Amino acid sequence: MDIRFRIRRYNPEDEAKARPYWQEYELKEVQPTDRVLELLHRIKWEQDGTLTFRRSCSAGICGSDAMRINGVNRLACKLLIRDVGSSVQVEPILGLPVLKDLVVDMEPFFAHYRRVMPYLVNEEAVPEDGRERLQTPAARSVYDDSTNCILCAACTTACPSFWANGEYYGPAAIVQAHRFLFDDRDRAEEERLAVLGEGDGVWRCRTVFNCTSACPRNIEVTRAIGEVKMAIRKGSPEGVIRPFSHEKH
Amino acid sequence: MTTLVLTLRESLRYRGAIGQWSWLLHRLSGLGVVLFIVLHVVDTSWAVFYPPLYEEAIKTYQSPLFTLGEFALVASVVYHAFNGLRVAFFDYRPQLWRHQGRAAVGVLLLSGLLLTPVFVLMFGHVLDFYNEEAFVLPLEEVIRAQLPFLGGFALAGIAALLLAGLHSLVAGRGSQTALSASSERFWWLYMRISGVLILPLVFGHLGMMHVVQGVFDISAAEHLAVGASEGQVGANATGTAVEFVHDRWSTFIGPLAIWRLYDFALLVLVVIHGFNGLRGVLWDYLHHPLAKRAALYLCLIAALVLLALGGGALVIGIDEAAIDEASRALCEIRQTHGATLEELVELGCEEFGETS
Image (cartoon, rainbow over all chains, first blue to last red; front, top):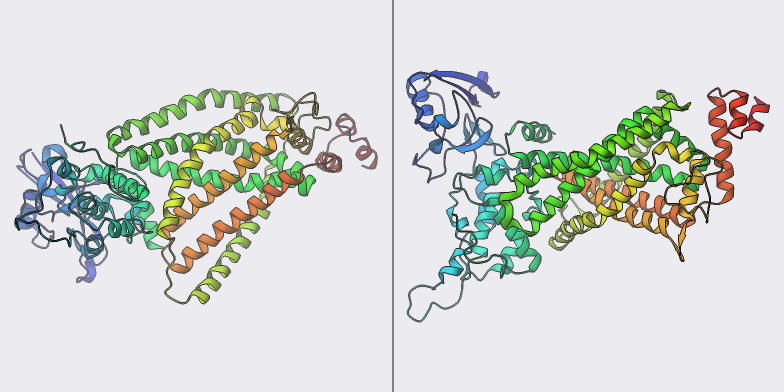
């Protein structure tokens, strides 16, 4: 089958291309099971070597090829042509500065990520056997879903609150905060709740649910944000989530 | 400003699911209701502070332009109320999020279901009004009557900017404009709790003023004001809007002036809910500290002015002199719009007939 691509281009180094514009490409002999990422490669290799985009593992794990495909944020490496149809429109994700074509500056995104302290905080002495801090399966299940995040930014750049206000931490950072806030081995809940409750924190979420449908890992993003809001209201993450309630069937 | 344009355009271009459209509709309906609240509270306070203006305001409300606005208002309130319940529900039960899309469709269906009979009844009032010899102010006059509001908005805007500038001077450059974490939490909670409290009050208010009777009945002579007691106040003898308000506010259940209390509760809850909502929307799109501060002061000024005018009117109430004044103003309005001597006599405006 033949596929028509319409791609948002931008190159600040070339005066003629320093204003974003659309460019079209035709691809022949495309299989329905080809992934959008493979076809972007074909365009770059066979037609236009200047087309610029990010990709690393090409297998939905590294999170580097999030882009807006036919209007919604997707990972180009996880999306099959049979699921998008014969005309494909590709744009960079929204709300982060575009550097070139489909490549955006992820630094503001990672600045928010760092802000929520995405690491385990526990200053207590190591257990007597000197090995690991044990955790029951029930306690582990509470934040299981949010461990799946690959930091691709598909959720954050699907959020109208983030588009309007880049200072908002955004869904991804809150999911990351959720992962540690609800971990019963963590001891920084007070600090975490304080950071998340600030003006640019969870209250900027207006439950639009764009993040949830954009997540390529099917994380229940808006739910995670809602649970963080409840923890802030209660002053503690304890008892907000029932164990095993995040398990997918 | 580029971010605002970009954000608004992309909010429409991004192909989000129904939640995105619910969010957009919620904002638009909220903004529409806030605009109406300003007109409504200020205009109604004239019933107490400057009766002739209230008679003119009600005449503008009875014009086709406002009739269109009235349908939009009722639709906005109904949608905003149901969607607000949906938002609050999933805030308290985030684990049930899988149902939110269906709930968003349900909100639209439920709004449509409720609005259909409501619109039929409202349209009935419109038909009744135009079937009888309706007196309608010309469009230019209806628009001209709203011009002072533009002046008021400009004045409030300038005051807000000045206060924001002053605040920035005192607080120093680079000072933060943000609410504390506990205020953020408080306002988030306030929006949900007040929303739930407002819902029955506003449905009752709209039901009385737009469905059971129409805006046209406010100035109908010999008409018993909705919710007023026949035994305590009787029908609207003068056919003035001021007497209509007086009759409602002078109706007691036991020692309680029931509609004054009702209106007071509605006023306080809605004005604070509305202007905090407006602040939230403005703060989403304004980033400069001065602009954010100005938006905050604008909302604060507007809320305080409305609470003072509306609350003051409710406390002071309406006396006989105000009704007389309104009665004369009504005659004057009709006289300047070419009512014949016969019509004036029928309206009880004999004295105006003689002088013309």
